[in-house]
Image (cartoon, rainbow, N blue to C red):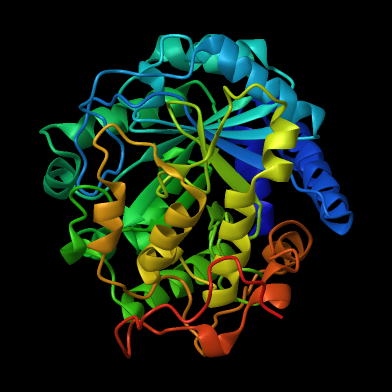
Length: 425
């Protein structure tokens, strides 16, 4: 399987792009994680990977979207994005995830990529704006991988994405990217309406035939103003997805990403471990894209290094959440986020201004934390990579107390048992 994968990368992609990905995402990416580990040992903090939602606007209206896509357009201007990336590069960072809305609606997006050819970008996109012309510019840059979202069959896609003809336009974007020999990924927010269509070997085989080099199955999170909880997966369905990811990694010549488990199958949250945080379209520094609360901004009059290192809100978020669950706090313990916001005076970073009420209305449910049902990696390559570069970095070992965990599958969330900010010992 590994030889088949190597052959695919060697023959189906631009060699220059492949070399740049290996160097900037691989070698430099591992270096950024190493520097992160060294900082933690000294009691310092700066996430080795940053996600940036560069614009709020989108041409689609997806079910469960938490972004104010219909609001007046706002974006991180080119100079502000450049300052943020430059300051992160000074800390050793070499990888940036670019989100929206729809990122390609940002008129300066390609210029941003061209301006920072010494780092690597992953763009989360619906693919509708990837034409041959755009793909050629991305190929010229050599430092961008489009991660294109496919949400199901034609009918399911139209329902999930809020308009007609979505799948055909998305597939056209994938074809343009592949035709220009980019490193192309396909992601799916797995929910009840698409799990049977896309979490199977037939779909992965089709991606391989199309020339897609990696895929990402992440779990649908019922958040935002219209959360659509009826689409959320059960615990059994989430275990099914995890097992499929582990098996596919060991049998198919395609890279499969996940952001929820270590090598032994223990659940984790990248925001809680400090692996990554998020910058919203207005420049607010949030724990992750779906937690729209902040006390700091990239526009603050101090270095980004100081902001991350001294943020009481982000530090409290990581430590308190790690003490209660290894899963997704917004799904399992939204009450903690409400109390954190109240304690730190965190602002609602949305236009709609209803995040606190939305959190109060969330019905707690299990996320990736499935105690007793851990599924370890089968592939030795993924086991090694995760042991070194994607684990809890000691966060849960230091803070997690299983006695504090409240299982949404067995009982309703009880009143808060701890004082916000109390350090678990």
